[in-house]
Amino acid sequence: MLDTPHPTPAAPCLDQQKLATALSGLHFIGGRYVPARSGKSFAVVNPATGEEVARAAEGDAQDVDAAVQDAARAQKEWAKMPARKRGALVHQCAALLKEHAEELARLIALETGKALRTESRVEAGVVADVFEFFGGLGGELKGESVPFAPNVLSVTVREPLGVVGAIIPWNVPMLLMALKVAPALVAGNTVVVKSAEEAPLAVLRICELMNRVLPPGCFNMLSGMGPECGAPLVEHKLVKKVTFTGSVETGKIVAKAAAEKIVPVTLELGGKSPMIVFADCDFAKTVQGALTSMRFTRQGQSCTAASRIYVERPVFDQFVEEMRKAVDAMVMGDPLDEKTDIGTIISPGQFEKVQAFIEEGKKTAGAVAHECSALPKDQALKKGLFLRPVIFTGLTRDSRLVQEEIFGPVTVIQPFDDPEAVLAEANDSEYGLAASLWTNNLKVGLDLAHRLEAGLVQINQNLVVQANLSYGGVKSSGLGKEASLEAMLEHFTHKKTIMVNMG
Ligand code: NAI
Ligand code: MG
Image (tube, rainbow, N blue to C red; front, side, top):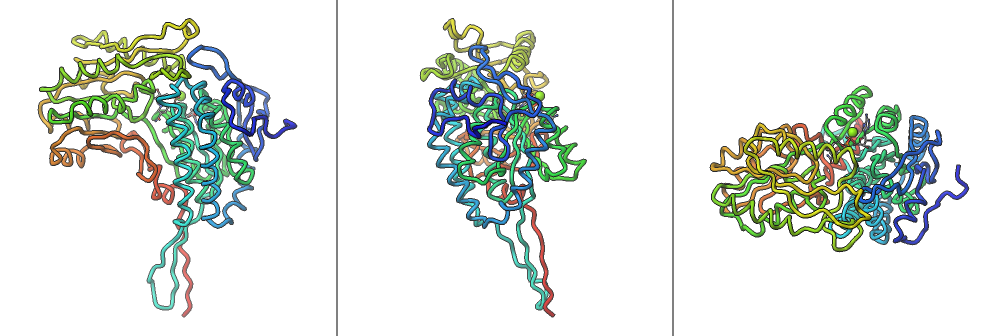
């Protein structure tokens, strides 16, 4: 055990490397930073330079048990606190997150390679917003009265589930953590999070900030490998709810483990989100919309990325050309440089996976690969995982690049002639997370919006997670919703019925 429970500085620290070093080798359990019980750790690497910036504690079943036991003890008291008071504390966390937003942005840029100006700062801001939103919802944890019989008082109450086990990925780790932790806490649960191997630092820093406000044990963070640390968390008998964001493959493993214990599970999995562009759209706005929808600034590492773009034939060539020019103008470089639009891919494994898709696309007969932007020339970045964004044309619906989630800076643009045909193509997917339609004919737009198989359909805009709007997919994209009041009530509480017979 460490002598100092908090090796991190109290004031915001804009030296991301100093903070990374201070956070090295630690979990956060029961209100303290503690090393892994096994003493093991693994490297956290800056993907822009290939350099090790910190070690992360390599958690196993022993650490999981310690964290879950602490969370279970803390939950008994936490659940007794009036819900509005719990909400007020979560709201106070938002204030601290705002104060530390720049620090968190720099730390997340260091460990993930996401550009500071276009991505990392945005994430840090939204995290505070999510805490603020859920912090205000304590008073909504209320039930109903049911007119059963004149001499019977019949009511429902909302009760917390207990300890929540949350497993998060690396692409937007702070935000995806916040979407689980903030509602779970307000609803009276305590939480143990297992961070992603590639991005354990920023979420670990947040623990100490939250611990200034919340009772110890309410919020715990473990780092480690999926099978060795994630799986025992999902399987732990005191974990009464599992919430997961990541790949479909791992989502199935997690859902099976939850089924073994009969506990509820929420899954936010991948996507292959279609963007449908009609010739009558507001053209310049739609090209901009395609850039943001495809999340090129995050190297396309987004579950809602518009990785299939269907464009009505009369404007197809012009659209491809304008998009190519716009992506070309984006600056790829040091994630911490204010001039940079696009940073790096997260890890060598993801880099190879995305490159394999690009190679396969290039070899496909009839396909054209428009490679955009330029690799950085800076010598310090020569080992960085930079990859030029690629816009493919000439691929058809049976291509693996049209069917599978690439999770990289690769989009496929295809022409269409008929709304019914494009609807059929858009729905011809294993996934159903998000979709967007771009047209000034709202009659057509609204009709297709109702018939697209997706959890979120937007016309003439493409925003991502917005606190207050339910977010979550259908088909293989997942189970359950996040980000809203309904999501908090449905997924982090159960409804108990109480009847009193006064006859
Ligand atoms: P993954 O789904 O394997 O990892 C997500 C989280 O699950 C990590 O914290 C990981 O440690 C944990 N995990 C892995 N195996 C586990 C197990 N057996 N039990 C419990 N937890 C486990 O995703 P990965 O390998 O990082 O990326 C692979 C692909 O997944 C990507 O190429 C992308 O297509 C997709 N993905 C989708 C995300 C989304 O936002 N929906 C986020 C990250 C990846
Ligand atoms: Mg994996």
